[in-house]
Amino acid sequence: MQKNLTSKNKRIIILATLTAIGILGIGVAILFTTMKAEAEAESSRQSQKPTFSFESSSVPSWWVGDNYWSDTGEAVSEKSLDADVPIVTMTVSQGTQEVPGGCFVTYSYLKGPIDTAVALKSMETRSVEYSEGLSLDKIGAQLVTMNTSEGSKEYQLHQYEFTGPASNTVAKGAQFAYVPLKDGYIEVRSYCEEAEQLAATSIVFSAVSFKL
Image 1 (cartoon, one colour):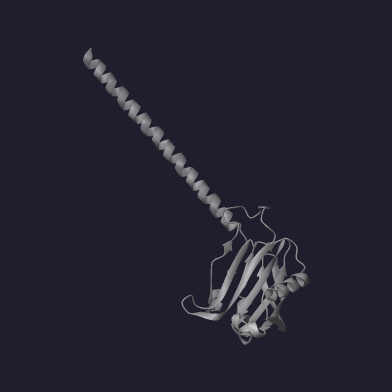
Image 2: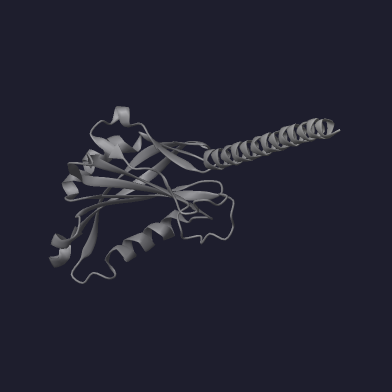
């Protein structure tokens, strides 16, 4: 009788162990599936973010930093973002990370409508309003293009030189532009140590594209 009970207990223990292993396996499978789904969702969110790209192979004398999203971890459609806060920014710099050159170009994408003339005037004013002894003189303009999700966009790049007693404390060459899009706009800002160096940035503009 004792022998039969012992045998029965063993079967119960074995059955309980197998059941526990099965439950554990199901739990691991559920956890793995959940983690995989979360990773795929995050990848999808990243792929849906507006992104600047730079064709570095065509411009070997410049290097590009990563896209920086001000809404990291949040959906791009989040309406709480301030209209004046760029959703994404990318900077292309002359030279290399180890040996930088004298110029850089920064692209930013912002939501909302844009009046390019008003925005340009505001940028000109803000560039010198807090710097006594600094003036901003317009020295030229050029038409450039950018490939976007809305097709090829042509825009005017305005070129300036900082002059005056305080000009030795800033980069003397500057370029500003605005590119209107359907639901927002791209702001382009470029600076060089000397105004004469602005011409060197011309190869950058056609190498940059934007995807919504």
